[in-house]
Length: 293
Ligand SMILES: Nc1nc2c(c(CN[C@H]3C=C[C@H](O)[C@@H]3O)cn2[C@@H]2O[C@H](COP(=O)(O)O)[C@@H](O)[C@H]2O)c(=O)[nH]1
Image (cartoon, rainbow, N blue to C red):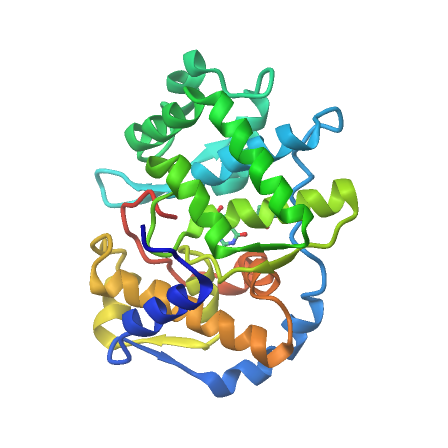
């Protein structure tokens, strides 16, 4: 098995970043100093876990949430964009809350998977992924334990994220390990919150559809006219095609440069950008039907 490392993901990103499709305006990174100043706190993952849950359960829950953190939108028959809603929440926040509300005795019971997820976008794939996890509760808790032990040593890495892919390939396979790295960020944060051990996250940015939208609105990345037209008109991009990969790659390269410029970890920069979606206003995100992000 070829081992995936932060170095190999960066190399992949540098290969996939097609500069005829996307320009990165490195000079504009300097203008982000105000954003970087607020990028002090580690992302918070304890807001949904119940205080009575032991750490292993908190981690199992966030592995579950991360596996389902993809494509919270769907195009309806008129071509309009519909986002996943639960209560008065939308997108991933809504999904995480729905999972928390249906989490019983340390799991989303297998018998509940279909009805809990049937009204979500890409529901067939979401249900398949949930079945992979819910039918292997013991394995979920074993991997949670292994990853907690690694985090407790003070560092998590891309190769730890790839353990999740080996354990649950349907849930976590992705050339850029987006969801597996989200899970590792959650584990680092939860270990810190519950044990007081600071955990260094040697991870890349999480290449999703919101961070490139924010980077584009900030003028850090700029699409070629052809790519801009597709994204702005909400034309779907082929999964794993060169356009989609170029967007994910430019996200990783940009966040790496922002992190280096302001001497902050990539996960913190990623999180502050993800939390800054309001800045992007009407900027469209790219549409790709995928379970990767
Ligand atoms: N790059 C990056 N992408 C992230 C996250 C998160 C979850 N973060 C929070 C969880 C606890 C912490 O407090 C974090 O703040 C979700 N996503 C992605 O966004 C997309 C959905 O977007 P929307 O429809 O707006 O919810 C989808 O691709 C999903 O995979 C992140 O942190 N970084």
